[in-house]
Length: 160
View (cartoon, rainbow, N blue to C red):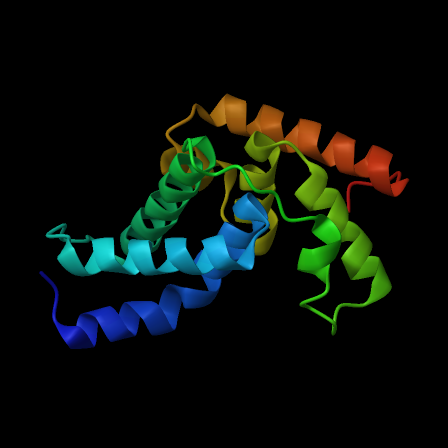
């Protein structure tokens, strides 16, 4: 079990990452808060010793993704929140950012994960492959396909 100081430091450091990742996966603020609490409770009770800050962050991301997947698979998780309801929250988003967010959220889950980790958390394909436990070529394929899907939805032509 971890000390209160370690737990508070982890929450301060990873809270935004966990919440954003949950919102991308679940599209629901209430479920996001539930998963947030579960992730940091699991962290508090965990006896895993981390080799580095990157290892700790990867562990938190993996636990978050697994918790989101478990919730989405659960029998009792049957209510859906519309994208419009979720987008009412971040009023400060510019219209073009809102359009990109909608396009990313509309991607299938396997693409959302790699897009989030690559473009929002700045992980390399190798790091993503380690976090998700997938082959690096799979990650490259998922990134390529997700870029193509986003290009089609947003009408862009370049790789930006």
